[in-house]
Image (cartoon, rainbow over all chains, first blue to last red; front, side, top):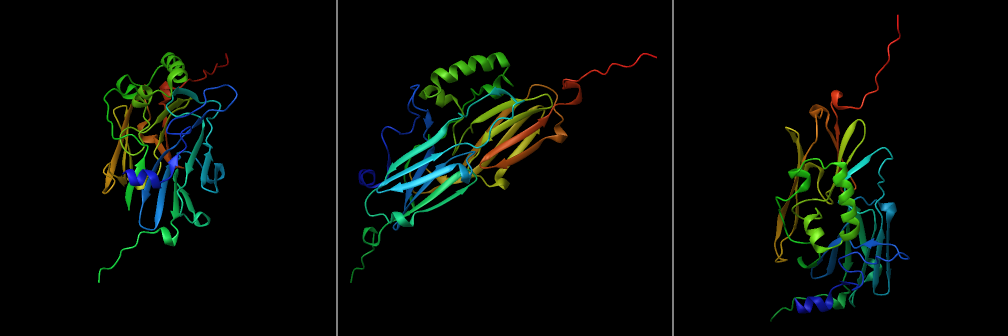
Length: 134
Length: 159
């Protein structure tokens, strides 16, 4: 696992698994749940964003930083009285530092049923190759 | 493919579920709860108790009502519509479903179950309950039975 920790995308410490910024000046955000998987030729990141539509999602890769911001598009109709609430009406934000050796221009993203699936292909030279023993 | 990191909590089923145990929370409870939400929404304790289990356990749930209906909204991202069961029996709404994901060992894929029940407050027209799934959120609309609705009383004209 130590090897993995060094290599894989990790959330920015400040924007880790919990919301940050209780302050008044900055907006509260919430870090979405996610899963990172790895295969020989790519990393796969699944980010859970219930209530988010395509238009409410911003995703950018700059250098080795991947930043995701999103918002729930659903808003409570005026005449609905809230009785119990477990979801927060906050923007989602996730910041991942990417490892070296990714083909960031070939990142593939798909949003379906509130789950964003990212595929981050490894560059050819960074892929694990099985070496044939002669 | 193997799992190398995730920030989701593991499975946690608890019997201490306010929306089932004490039924449809009263508005006064809501007010108290709101206070709690504000002060400690992000404490571990609170999250442990909240339904923020996406992979397994209890999905996060919001409850609303208006004059005509009760509404239950549940976060169920990444589910197949066919894999979601919505059942209504004797005033208790139960939503269950499963999705595929990696186990904690990160090697084997397995099925994760989610299930949550809501005890509803009063007469529901059980035959007219509707459910819709959109953007990973399930919305169940439960119409109040005629006698439970706030009705406007028509004043008859005197003869």
